[in-house]
Amino acid sequence: MSTLKACQKLPQAEREVWEGGYVKLASWLQEGKRKPVRPVMGLWFDLQSGVIVGHELGQEQPKPADFLKQLLAAMAKPQMGPPRRPTHLCMKDPALAEHLRAPLASIGVTVEVIDRFIAIDKVVEMLTQSMQTESDGKPFPSLLKVPGVTHEYAEHFFHVAAQFYREAPWKQINDRTPIAIQCPHFFRDPLFFAVLGNAGMEFGLGLFITREEMDLLYVIGVPEGQSVPPVRTASVLFSEPVYLAFEDLDAIEQNGWEIPHPNAYPHLFKISPKRKPPLRAPSFVLVQAFEAALLALPGFIAKNKSKIKNEKPCSGLVHAKTFHGDWPMQIRID
Image (cartoon, rainbow, N blue to C red; front, side, top):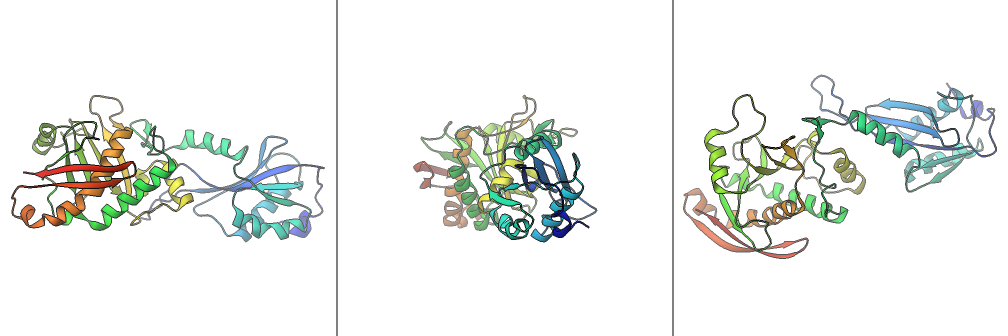
């Protein structure tokens, strides 16, 4: 085992800068019946020679003391080059850097906190491209990659979705009940929605371009041997994190965005059955339509729950305070 005392005796170049830290890989690891986890890799990269001097793979991020042990091991037995000490270690994690600053200073290694890695981010990007979970040959749609969706808007959208999940409107309406919504800001007027979840299987909100397509799906469902319905549709489904793009998962974790339950990560996508792959990222106007519906429907359904329960028509005007302003929405259930 390498120790601080042993590593203090290692040679040290005049200026050798390493990057170091933990990164979550773009893959899922599942053992037996346990829940899937994202593997965590510790990486140490020598910027001068352009090589990885050490790495450790685990199922969770180790404690700072373990990180120090792994770093000292990389100094004593690097994957490339002779045993040596760097003069500087650059890290992105301020808390981890603070834990390491004093012990590394005792062997002549200074610790600096940086906003972004120069090399490790590129290494992770390469790993992501080779390991990324795919669906029909394409990555899961990412909300953050939709043109027009900023980090601020994504945070707002996750908050709205969490609020919808907590209000659980599926307890008061059948998922086969068509909900027509007219709004001057929609890309098509009206749009048809269905609250999903009263069957206790999938929870969320479905969207259909036409009432005919919605009715067709209810009649024929998903044909045997196919994985997607034969009609255009889009959904926000609350599910395990394995169904989200890794870019979105990283942003949720790094920024503390709201998730109402460990198995209720909102997964937004659209299905275009005539295109390949059929599972696709939503457009910006589609994201906005879902945002408005997620805001408006729980209150409307709660207000009209008696009529809905007795299958009586109901309608009303609801103003949704969306991220981009007040949206008037005429909601109708026949």
